[in-house]
Length: 123
Figure 1 (cartoon, rainbow, N blue to C red):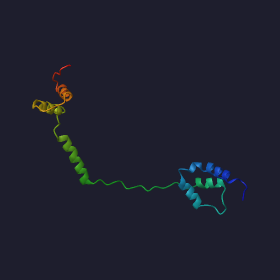
Figure 2 (figure 1 turned 90 degrees about the horizontal axis):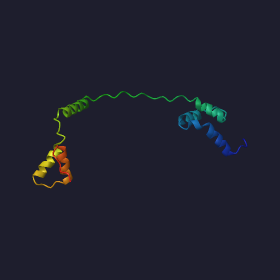
Figure 3 (figure 1 turned 135 degrees about the horizontal axis):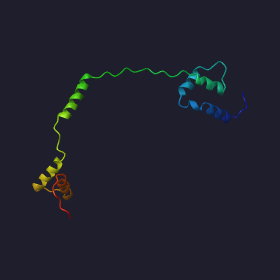
Figure 4 (figure 1 turned 45 degrees about the vertical axis):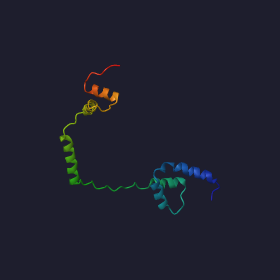
């Protein structure tokens, strides 16, 4: 048993193994494959570096659901086939409300008139 202070030993091990912070599986592999003789920090680091690269199983490509694909295509076709809405319809509706005698905020009425190209009164 050595005479080095335990805090110094921890510091040396932390320094030598700092690069394995994101590769804990390499440290786990090294611990599972320790030699008969207890390794020092440099031997343990070397053992960690010898850990095999992780293997990943490739997933199967997703199989398209034909009924879902047809539904999406039909919705897209319907969106293109619908008649275009008049972007100034809001202004026409507001003017109709005003002409019917309903209360319409003055600023809204002004914006509707401007959108429809009607003359607006300047204050």
